[in-house]
Image 1 (cartoon, rainbow, N blue to C red):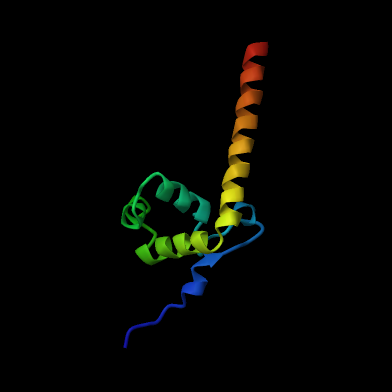
Image 2 (cartoon, rainbow, N blue to C red):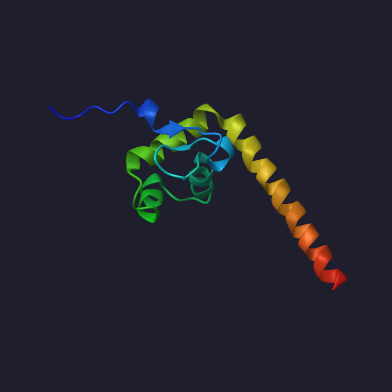
Length: 98
């Protein structure tokens, strides 16, 4: 008989890792990162190929988490974009001052 895996164990959070963002257990790969590639048009199979230490089941678990918690992940993505824009503006202003 083959081993049965509880898919609820695939996604974890730890305040000290990746700011407490949901991530694939045993890795630093966040759900947000998987979703980013998914939104770029990569299939779960292609994502698993890009990160060979992930199983296809882990990628699907991340996508399932996203679809079940879309508002949370979309808010995290939006906040990251705002922060990236702020850093770009600061960098641009510092470069102009030189």
